[in-house]
Image 1 (spheres, rainbow, N blue to C red):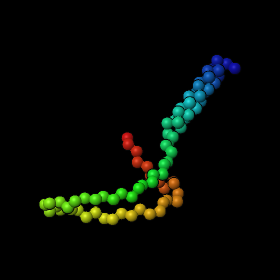
Image 2 (cartoon, rainbow, N blue to C red; image 1 turned 45 degrees about the vertical axis):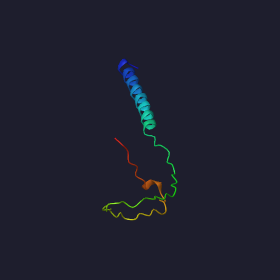
Image 3 (tube, one colour; image 1 turned 60 degrees about the vertical axis):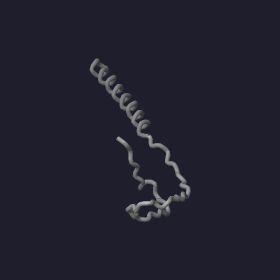
Image 4 (tube, rainbow, N blue to C red; image 1 turned 120 degrees about the vertical axis):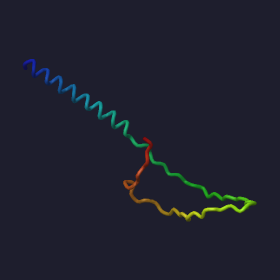
Length: 80
């Protein structure tokens, strides 16, 4: 083997090992946290009527029922 071929093999091995290390580090950094199930308790809010008439906004009623069958449809927001 001549010198050029030896240098080429050394360079090829170096690039391949650097790519393997980079891929390993990227996989470790991209790991997603485990999903957790949150159970909410029922809350009752009790208030007192205001003395002065206050204009209140009427919000729509929201009822959450069921769950998704496939976790692949879940979109998770992340801060940049």
